[in-house]
Image (tube, rainbow, N blue to C red):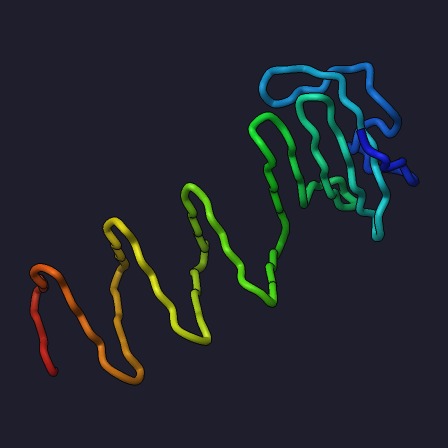
Length: 162
């Protein structure tokens, strides 16, 4: 399984410290396999726990209280990364690309997208925006609206140059 050997006490919920367990480990898919668990004690009471068997392996970074903050699960469906905590920052000096079947972002108190250069939003399908109110503003320069077909304005009042 892993060459990580236990060092010091593991959190209470980290599981067995030595070699294969005699008890089956649930894989989340209803399959039970013999599991192996090892823990490596890290700074400030954190631990890296490695658990697994033939069907699934899980690497978990837990805090001193036993709460999981980073988990990497490897199973038949592929690799899954879960990150839980107060804050997450991703920084790179080069390009960052995110590609997925679909992407969803939700900010409970807001979302800010900023760029020190140009920004672009494109969709091969319909691009739809909605909000309690909307503002389009050019702080310097023109606002240009172009359509391949009709331009339709519908409002209680259309105020031009007012």
